[in-house]
Image: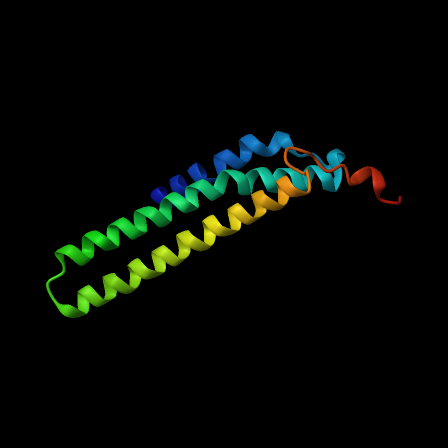
Amino acid sequence: MKRILAGISVGVLPLVALAQAYTPANGIGGLITLLGSLLQAALPVLISLAVVWFVWNVFRYVIAGSDEEKTKARVNMIWGIVGIFVMVSIWGLVSILANTFGTQGTTADIGDQLPI
């Protein structure tokens, strides 16, 4: 139980540090900006995990003894490549669209435009 609580607290502490980035006074624009920064920080971590998953399955394929283990490792390698491709492709597409429409590095101020 202590390990579970320690793991949860380690996972939540970065969110506590980001709590100052959004207050209700910032409105919906501040919330969108906060979510964007969280996604921007999470994407390299997800891509890194996908690469580690792929390399781990290559290792499993090399040391596998039976054909069934090799087949499982091969299928997981293929899904790892598909996952990496999808994540990098979407990241690149969003970057191309942001550069095309000139929204790179801008912040939305939607709260001022909403009727009260």
